[in-house]
Image (cartoon, rainbow, N blue to C red; front, side, top):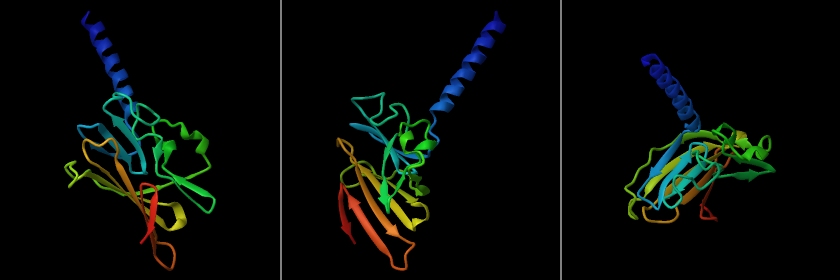
Length: 178
């Protein structure tokens, strides 16, 4: 009897371990975790993202509804080429139609979550990626104030490849040249 129970426990442990490993995202991400209503904002080091709203838990807002980061994020199109997060290396993706039609960003750095979640000191994550051989570098700053139904993404694109330096900043679909 003890042997059967031990065997069942061992099989259950192996199955649980395999399931837990499958659920771990292969893309490193920072998690802005709060009391809500956005309880989690995951920002991948490849500029992908996923959000969980308190009213929708345990599901997440973007496809896949059970993985982070998900099939959402920052994209850039330039000279007929599309650059985007590395969706193919996520646990799974519905962005398969993009395969071969885009070049993934190259992760450079990502800060830990900082801030206290107040309006004066919002939660903040800064992520930097390279845009293939273009010489462009994207710095994305994601912030969240506890109690808000949205979070903010600000993007700064710097041209490090040209003889002259150029920098673009954008926020909430407004772009300003600096």
